[in-house]
Length: 96
Image (cartoon, rainbow, N blue to C red; front, side, top):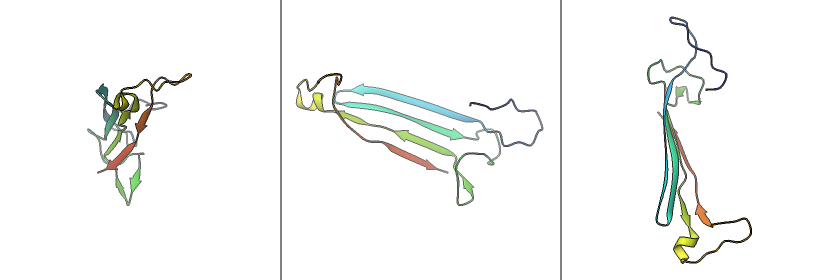
């Protein structure tokens, strides 16, 4: 993380650690990208991340599936600098 300092053993700070898994790929007409973050794996629950209703979130997920219109129609729909057209969406989830 940017601007984070190393932790001093025994110091009481709001440092956090997390695990991030990123994934992506394409299969047929579908193109998928996303990642999952799990916060505070080895530390207490106090953190500087999102806190809602007094309980810190332990997980954040972003999932961005797209569907290629070129692959669906079987035609090259490119024009100018645009190489491929997609129907796209973004799903974000955070929770404990």
